[in-house]
Every structure is written in C-alpha cells, then in structure tokens.
Image (cartoon, rainbow, N blue to C red):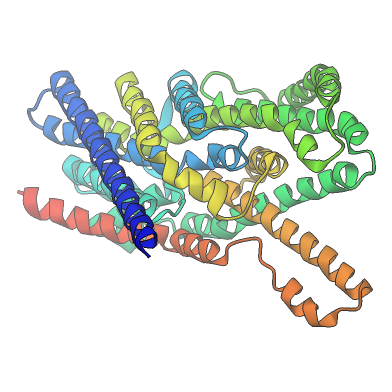
Amino acid sequence: MAKHKVDSDLKKLMGFMAGARKQNQSLANMGLSVVFLIAVLIYATLKLGDGGTGVFVIAAAVIGAYMAMNIGANDVANNIGPAVGSRALTMTGALIIAAIFEAAGALIAGGDVVSTIRKGIIDPSGMADQMVFIWAMMSALLAAAIWLNLATWVGAPVSTTHSIVGGVVGAGIAAMGASSVAWGKLGMIAASWVISPVLGGVIAAAFLFFIKRTILNKDDMLEAARTWVPVLVGIMAGAFSMYLVMKGLKKIWKPDAAMLWLIAFGGFAITWAITRPLVFKASKGLENRRKSIAQLFTIPLIGSAALLSFAHGANDVANAVGPLAAIVSVAGDASIGGGKVGIPHWVMVIGAIGISIGLLLYGPKLIRTVGEKITRLNQIRAFCVALAAAITVITASWLGLPVSSTHIAVGGVFGVGFLREYIVNQDVKKRHVEAKTPKDQKKVEKRKLVRRKEMMSIALAWVITVPVAGLMSAGLFFLLNALFHK
C-alpha cells in the first residue's frame, strides 16, 4: 500500500516537473519572439524614420515580422511533418534543415514583385487616399497573422494564402464596399478548399498503391525494389526539378513549356542513373521485408523535405511581406493602383528570418500534427505525400487552378491513410470470411487508421479561414479608421 502511494506521488511529481518545463519553454519562446519583433522595430525605425507615414510603415514591418513567424510556425510543418512522422528525420534535424532551406529560398529565389492586392481580388483604385490603403493592408496582414497564431495554438494546419486573402477581402469590403471584391476569383479560391486536398490525396494514394503492387506485394521485394525505387526517385527528381523552376526559381529564370519538360526529363534520367547502383548496394544484406524496403526511401525523403522547404520559402514568403511591400511602396508616393511593386531586400530579410524563427520556436506542434496525429506514416507513405505535393502544384499550375500547398500536403497524408485503412480492412475481412468467422467481421470493418477527430477539426479550420480572417480584418480596419481618421 505504501509502495503504491509512493509510486503515485512520484508520478504526480514527474508530471508537475514536465508541466513546469513545458511552461518555462513556452515563456522562453515567447521572450525570444518579442526580442525579434523589438529588433525589427528598431531596425525599421532607423531605416525609415518616424515622421509622416513612416510610423505606419514601421508598424507594418513589425506586423509583417509577426506574420512571418506564424507562417514558419504553421505552414512549414507541411513540408517536413511527414519526414518527422516517418522517423526519417529527427525533430531537431528537420527544424535545422527546414530553417536553412526556407531562408535560402526566400533570399535567393524569393519573388521580386508581388501584386499590390493579393491575387487581384479587390480593386484598390476605389480607396479614398493613401492612408486608407495603408490601414487596409495593415488590417489584412494583422488579421491573417492572428488567425494563423490561433490555428497553430489549437494545432490546425491552415493555408496562409487563404488567411491573407480573407484579410484583404475583409479590409476591402470595409474600405470600399462589397462591390470592390472580384467574387469570381474568390469563388475559385473557395473551390480550392476541395480541389487541393482531393488532388493531393488521390495522387499520394495512387503512388502508394503503385508501390504496394510493384514492390511490397512481391515475393522478392528486394529485387522489385532494385527495379522500381530508382524509377520512383527519378520521378521525384523530375517533378522537383520542374517544381523548383516553376515556383521556386521564377525570379531568376522563366523557361518555356518545352524547356520545363526537358528539365524534368533530365532530372529523372540523371537521378535514375545515379540512384540505381546506390539502391542495389544499399539493398545488399537487407532482409526481404517491408521495413527494410522503407529504409531505401529515407534519403530521398530527406531530400524532398529540403526541396519543399526551399520552394516554400521562395514562393510563400510573399504572404508575409507582400502587403508590407505594398505599404512601403504607397508610403513612398507610388500609385495605389499600380499593380506590381518591388519587394525591398530588407523586407525579404525580415520575412526570411521571421519564418525561420517561427519554425524553430513554434513549429514542432504542427509538425507532430501533420506527421503523427492524422495517421501513422512510414518512409514509403511519407515519400508518396512529398511526391504528391510537388506533382499536384505542377498540375494545378498548368490547369490554372488556385491550390494551397498546406491543403495538398495534408490531403496527401489523408490519402495514404485512407488507402492503407481500406487495404488493411479488406485483407482482414477476407481472412475472416475464409475462416468462416462472420461475427468478427463487423469489428474488422470498423477499424479506423485515420483519426476522424483530426480530420474534422482540420476541415473546419479550412472552411472558416477566409471568413474569420475577413471579419477580423474588417474590425481592425474600422478601429484604425476611427483612431487615426482626421
């Protein structure tokens, strides 16, 4: 009895200590975040001064840094979550790789121009004056950042693009009325709530099904792997070659369609030729079982996580700094309806550093959600998710469909999870039928390998992202207008 009490007290003490460590870590992370925002405030003040519209530009710089941190905390998890969940990478290794490649993508290949109004969903020419435009962009940026912060806190991976779109729509309606919104484009964005995860899920599931049929269901899995793993890695290389040129290197180079396909084929052929002897060598001495085959996908999976992070940093940093760049341009007496504005280098630096800091301080929570809480992943399933992400973005770009990289990656995780669930249930059902044990069939058929609770909470967060960000943005705009309107 006494021993039981001691064990119980010891467990309580250990739980208390773990909670205390977690609380201290949260406070430390918050402190580092505040230090970064203060550093941005000081830097922007020294660079811009504090007179006239400079005050608002400085405030926008701090808000842009806050937005960048939230992108790092929420959005980057989709690139490295599957690799961590499959144990191909440790959390620390994934954070370091993603932080380096996100920053490199933003600084090396980040877009040199962005639309003054994100996606062209509102017409800014109807805004009364320069300050109304600045308040609208500040409201959109802050609303999107707050919503991302809330989503990260509850553990829901959401689209940063949809967050900023919702913010711009809300501020635009508050400033100019509902007629200013291009509702057709907004409808296309809403359609991507379905298009993105379905495409990602179907493509990821298709590759997993192919791997099962051609490798995992063969008697000699190692021999099949020596044939097909180099082909699959080559497809990944070709897809990523095209993906990086189209989405990640568009600032540096914009080749035509024929050149893009030539690049993709070249990436496939070179990688296949290099990978084939490496796979043959790595497969020697391995046991003829599925866990051994999964090991062959570890290095390609790590490479895909790095490349996805690079492309994300190059392509999505504009979500953090695009409105800030527009504010800087308009504050410098540029036309409100000028269409395109350059992104100053110092603005890109804020975005790149902010994304990396947000990832390092707050990223693990969403990484675990994507990599572990939705369904169980191994290296093969995670490889299929990464490959689907690149191919889906390429396909959507060719078709002109507005898709979300977040929705694609999470949809891919759901896709491989549901396929695995279906196959497992069918196999077990078949064995029970052959064994003539019908009473157990109902239990077998109800087996769930994808957590429905996570699926419903994520789907809900996706659906409400645009309206919630829009409502917050409109409220912030009315507040700024009331406080500073002369």
